[in-house]
Length: 348
Length: 230
Image (tube, rainbow over all chains, first blue to last red; front, top):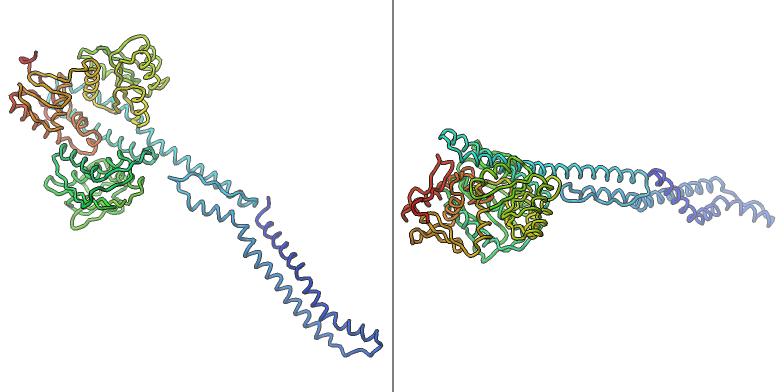
C-alpha cells in the first residue's frame, strides 16, 4: 500500500522514462544533425586530406540546444498531460466512487454502502473511517427509532391499568362531582392513549413495518369510509369524481389511516354546516374544507406537534401521520389555501 | 364459568378479576409464564385471557400448550404490542379473539361474553333482555314482537350496553367500541351522545322506557326491565 503522493510521483517518473525511451531516436537525430554535424564534416575532410570546411559551431550549438530544450519540454509536458489526463483519473477512481456513494447515502432508507477496495493508503483510511462513521450513525438512528417504539409499547400497559381502574371506579356509587372528575380523567387518559398510539404508528411507518402492498380501488375504498363517517358522526361528505374506478397500490390499513386523518381533521375544524369535499382524479386526491380563519403555514403544517392556531385540537400528530404515509408510498402531499378553502392535495 | 387471566401486570389483572367477578365468572390469575403453563396443564377453563409478553417466556407457547391440552377452551389474546405478525400468528395457532392494550373493561367483558356464548350455545343466536330480543345473526331487534329498525351504531350501542348489563359503561368505552381507532382522532365523544339519544327515543317509541340510565353524561348503564324477564 502506497501513499497518494508516492504513487502519483512514481507514476509520473515511469511515464517520463517511457516517453524518454520512446523519444531516444529523436534525440539521436538531433545530436547527429546539429552537434555532431561539424565533427563529422571535420572527420570527413581530414580523412580526405582536404582543408577544414568553414565551421558554424556556435550557431549549431544554439539551434541544437534550443531544439533539445523544446524537445525536453515537450516530453515533460506530454508526460504531465498523460499522467493528469488518464492516470490520475484512474488513481482517483476509488475516491470518486466513495464520494458518489456518500452522496446517495440516506440515513433513513439505505444500508451502509460497500466501498471500493483501494491500494492507496489515504483512500483506504477514508473508506474505513467513513464506514465506521456511517455504521455508528445508522446504529444511533436505529436505536432512536426503536426507542420511540419501545417506549410507546412500554407505556401501553400503565395506560391500560389506569383505564381499567377508571372503569372500575365508574361502578361505585358516585356523586355528580366525583363523576365530573372521572370524566376529566377519562378524557386525559384517552388523550394520552391516542398520543401514544399515534407515536407508535409513526414509529412503525418509519420502521417500514407495513410491508404488504396491494392494488386497491380508491373510489370504493373512500365510498366505504364515507359511509362510516356518515353513520358515526352524522356528517355528509361529498365525493366528486368522473372516474369509474381509481386503482392504486397501497397498504390498506395505512390508506385507511390516511383518509381518516384527513377527513376527521376536516370534520374537527369545520362547523357542522361547513362543506367538506373529496375530489378524486386519475392521479390526485383532494380533500377540501372551509377555512374559518387564517390559512395554515405550508412549511410547518406537517411537522409534529405544530399547533398553527390557538385552538389546540387533536394531538398534533394527525397531519404528520398523513405526511409519513404519503412519503412511505412515494406520494406527494401539498397544502394550499384556495378560494378560502383548506386544500390538501395528494399526487399519486 | 371458569376464567384464567394470564397477565403479568398485577393491577391490570386485579381490575379484570374485579370487573368480571360479579358475574358467574370464577376468575383465576397467573402472573408469570411458569404459573400460566402449570395452571393450563392442571385445570380446565372455559375462557383464557392471554398476554403475549410474559416474564419467563412467550405467550404464544402458552397458547400452543392450551390448544394441545384442551382445544375447546376459548382464548382471547391481550397484547400491548399490537403487531400484525403476533396477531396473525396467534389466530393461526387457534386464538379466538385479539384485543390490543390499552382496552376498556366493558370491551373485554363483551368479547368474553360473545366468545362464551359462541362456544356454549352454538345454535342460539338470540339475546334477550326484558322485552327486548336481539337476533345476533341477522342483527335485528324485536321489542314485544315488533321489529325496531336501528342504525348500525345504535345496534352496536344497544348490544354493548346489554352485554355489560349491571355495569356502568363510560362514554369513552362506547366511543372506542363504535369507532375503533378513529375514536383517537375526535376531540370529544359527543357523537356517542347522539346515538344514545336516538336509541332511547326509538326504544321508547316501541314501549321500552328508562332502560338506559345516564350518569351525568359520563357513563351509561343498561337497566333490565325486571317484570318481563323470563
